[in-house]
Image 1 (cartoon, rainbow, N blue to C red):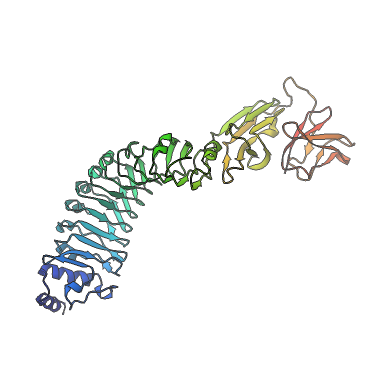
Image 2: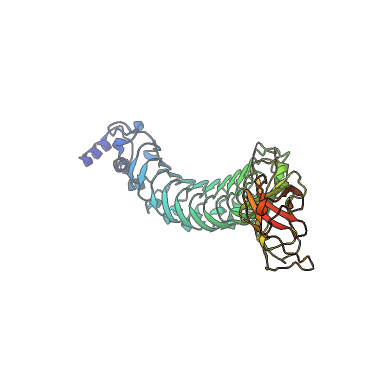
Length: 493
């Protein structure tokens, strides 16, 4: 039955098409479940009525059937359409692999099969198609490496294999094509470095490599790409300083990498730049972007910037996001001699006033102050612990800076060198909630409670059995003073 149908079609007087192309089209229709296409072909009607066909000189020049409910394995019948220039299918349930003999379609220029379920590798024979100008295989399940033969393409304009499962490195030589306009390998598993030959891709407009495992590229890779508008390098393992960008750049993102150092002041001269997203790196200095001629969106969160960097940029652009910086400085361990006076300054943003410091000890909220000073007169074993500070500023309400962690240790000793030998009073419980007791006091005695800097907070007379009521105190560290005895520290919860 099927062969009779094919013969009758070929013999129809209106069918001015080569026999091989006629057979290939009918086979393609059958293999891809043509009866259930959204817009199907009526095989009894002239080819001029067949949806998505482009013909010339009695040959098929193009098939364009995107979003047409094609189903099944990609038909090998397309290999017989040897004059086809344009092949576009996708957004359908298309499975199988790219035919190994794809080079038979020697005139092919455009090959699109997007948002489907193609699997397997990209065959090396693809590189033998000398006329290829555009490849789009995005959002499939392709795996394995890109064959090195793809570097043979000299007419390639657009290349998109994003959202697959491709591995390995970018073939050396792919960037030598000066005609290349878009290059998108995002959301795969590519490794290694971006080849230096991409410096020759001077007509590149979109350079999209985000969400891979790439590790490096020359810092001046994009410097001479005079037409580059959009570069997305986010979610890789890039290191080093901020890359040199061309004057044509409009959008640059490098989120979630390991770039370090300063954002150069020269970036303010990029007059076309409208979006800069550098979140989640290790940058530590940024210029004031006020007056930039085009910048609209600036996202700098997750770096090592401080209020000195953030506050000058408030209001500089329409969309400015800065929350969530990494801890400032390096974690420090200091061994303090017991009984000595000890101070430590968390020197953060010394030129910015109106900050509030919220101290934590062993991750418990400890106290607040207007400076970053820790002061311990007569340092003792009770003062040991790990401290850090969270700093806020009313002019940047979405940002809380966190200092590095400071771990203080000491040797246990019973006496303060060259100091009083009077034994400190014993108190319990410590930390305390609503009240504490001074051990050994069976009579009423006046006591003074101060903050760690010695500022009086509360005066009180002990109750029976040395009881003190402290429920009105804010949580934090305090000093208890009894006449004639060394001060003793306690924590109010």
